[in-house]
Image (cartoon, rainbow, N blue to C red):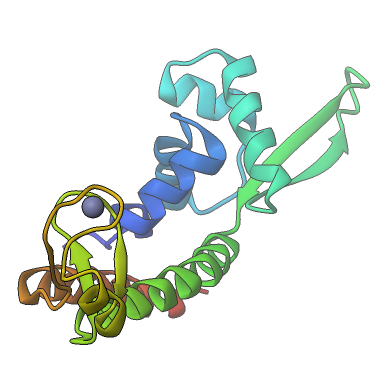
Length: 177
Ligand SMILES: [Zn+2]
């Protein structure tokens, strides 16, 4: 069985697309399989893209510390050669840092969703504690619609699933070296 790539994870795909652009996912996947260092020309050939396009993606990834290069002078031509390497551990670390915050926010939202003391407007985004809603006779002060109890098991379950999914991928990423 082929080794599972971290690029198969939704968190990694989204992240690479955001920080590296549309070519980043494929580029990282190829480099992950190659393992050794590579030149931008090699990657361009493999992806059937222009070298300048590959360099743009590499520079974006370099900015975040994901792609690192080594410079060496070609003795014959006097030109510099750049060999690149993708740091998987850096990808994992950046995502873990970001997703830790996302999970915290989702858990907060989840807890609020199971809070019986809050009332939501059925039409707009108004939300208030029971005491205030009672004062308004459970009629939204903004739009006049009915206010209903914020406790929504379906929404809670959705959030639970979302949290579980992210945490599952985070566990895999925590093992990346
Ligand atoms: Zn309203």
